[in-house]
Length: 206
Image (cartoon, rainbow, N blue to C red; front, top):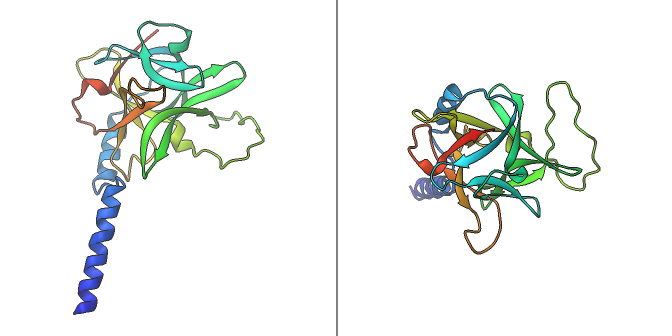
């Protein structure tokens, strides 16, 4: 009896830890629904503006990505590249640096969109060979999927593809990780297909 109680208690603790890490029992269902409604978008350069804050996602010195620009500029231009059906990378080349928006993993969850060296292999084109002294970046962290927002032209929720089928989905938000105190990345906020939150809506323009 004591052994049964101990096992039950241990399983309960593990379940709490898993939930704390963001694992979702409905993850597969949520992911399938998101991908079903996701759209293919033209491979072009876009300026991406948050509906709530009216700020553009910008590439900042120090290779940071932050929703802080009030006007369009070269720093707010993002080139979408198709990786697979309904999956895209947001690229911004800064001189010889080939960077793309990537999901950062911190404290057991994808917490922010940051700029990392783009290591994706598109179609039949081979990836540049780089002498790396770190673990290669998983492709899932560098691709995103867009779901159109009903009633808003050229406006999407931008979902991080990484962990979309096993954890609570996350979307690119209109908030900087550092707030007003320091420069950083862009917060990834928990969201689902039917999340009605203008801070997660992004309008694409050229």
